[in-house]
Image (cartoon, rainbow, N blue to C red; front, side):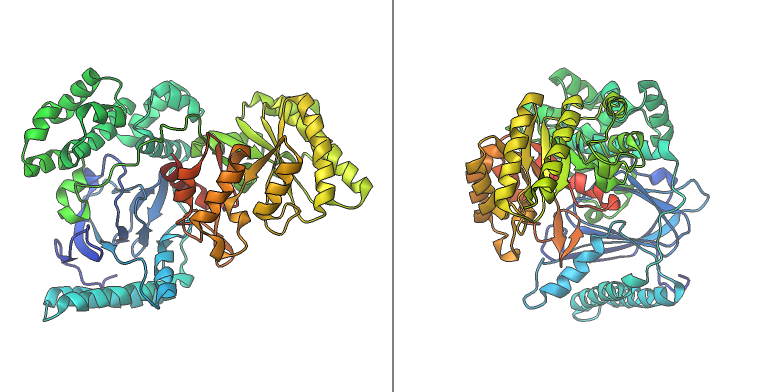
Length: 579
C-alpha cells in the first residue's frame, strides 16, 4: 500500500448524491473519538478501503474485521458503522460513494457483474500483494485525474472509476478473505441487538422485551450493552429515535403528532422531554431554525458525520419505511435446516441472534439423532416443547406420497400422521408438505387421508406448489385447492416460475386473486443464473415489493433456500420490504 497516492482531506466529487450519476472519493483519517454512535444507511453505494492494519465495521449488526488493503462493499440501505480502535495515530482510509444508472443499453450483463460485487455473503475483498498492486494502480490513475482536473476531467474521472471497478471484478476470484478475530459471542449479540433497535425504533422497545427476545437476562443485557456500546440501552434507543425525528422535522412536512408515533415515542411529553435533553430546545423551536443550524444539530449526534464532507453522509437520508399497520401479527421466520443447527439448543440461540419470530422445521432433517417422525420419542418431543420454539410449520419432504406403489405411499402417509402428533405437541398450527415429482392423483389420495387425520390433532395441512413437481405450479395448486377444500398453500413465488418471462406483476396478481385466502405462509428465496442468491438480488428483485402490496392477510414470511452467511442480510431485506 506504500505506493498508493494519498492526500489528507483531498476529495473528488461528481454531482450530488441525489443525481442519477454521483461519485465522491474521500481521502481522510479517522480515530476512536469519531466512532459513530449508531449504524446508518444511505441510498448510494459505498466502497471502504482501509489503509491501516486494524479496522472494523458493523454490517447489519455483524462484526467484520478488516486489515490493510481490504476493500468493503456496502450496497444501498445496508445498515453499517465504522469502528476505529484506541490508538495514538488516526487511521487513513478511502471512502468512495457513488450512484449510477441501473442499466446501460446493450451492457446489462456487465453492469450486473459490477453490481454483484455488493451481493457477496461477506462483501470484503482481500487480495495477495501481486493482485493488490493492480487495484492500487487504478486508484492512482483516478487520484491523478481528480488532481489534475484537465479539460473534460469529469469524464476522465468517471472512466477511471469504471476501470477501477472492472479491475476488482476481474480479481474477485483471487480473494483470500475469511472471517477472523471477531469479538466473543456477548459482543456479537450486543451488535445484533443494536441492529434490531435500528430497524424497530418505531415500535415499543423495552429492556425486558429485548432480553427475552435474545434469551439473556435484563441485568446482563444492561451491563454488557453499556460495556460494548459505550452508552446505556435506554440512551441508545432514545438517540436512534431522536435522529429519525430530526430528519422528519427538518426534511418533511410531517406533523409533530405523526412524528411522535412514527419514531416510537409513547407520548408527546416523553418526546418533548427526550428531544430537549439531546438538542437543548423544543421540537417546534428546532423547526424554526435555518437549515444550516438544523444540520449542525443533526450532525452533532454522529461524530464521523460532522467531520466528513456533507455529501458522504447527506443530512436528508431517508427514514426507514413505516411498519405496515394494515396487517397485524405478521411474523418473520426461517426454514431451520438452512442454519445447520448442531442441536435444538443451538438452533434456539441462532434464532435469538437473528431476531426472527418463528421457524419452519423438518425435525429429522435438522437433527440427525432423530431418524424420522415415526421414531420420534415422547421424551425427545417434550424436550423440544420445553425449549419454547414458535413453530409455524412442521415440515415433511416426500415424493413417496405421490408414488404409484401403494405400500410405499401408505408408509409415507404414516410418517405424515406421526408428524401431525409432533405438530400438536409443539403447538405448530400447520403441517407443511413439500412434495416432489410423482402422480398428482395419488398425491390427492394421500392428502385426503392426512387432512382427515389432521382434524383430530387440531392441525391444518399445507402443500408447496412447484413447477415440475406433483403439484405443478400455479395451475396445479388451483386444481388441488378445488379438490381438497381444507388444503392450504405454502406459497414459494420463485417455485411457480417456469422461467424469467413469467416474473410479472400480473402473474402474481392472479395468483393472489385466486389463492389468496388459501395462502398460509410465504417462503422467500431468489436466484440468478440458476444459483441461489440473496433475496432481492436475483430475478425476484422487482417482484417481491409488489408481492408485499398484495398480501391479503397476516401470514408468516419464511426465508428458505439460503446459505447461513446470507441470512442476516435477507432478514433485513424482508423487514424493509414486507413490514
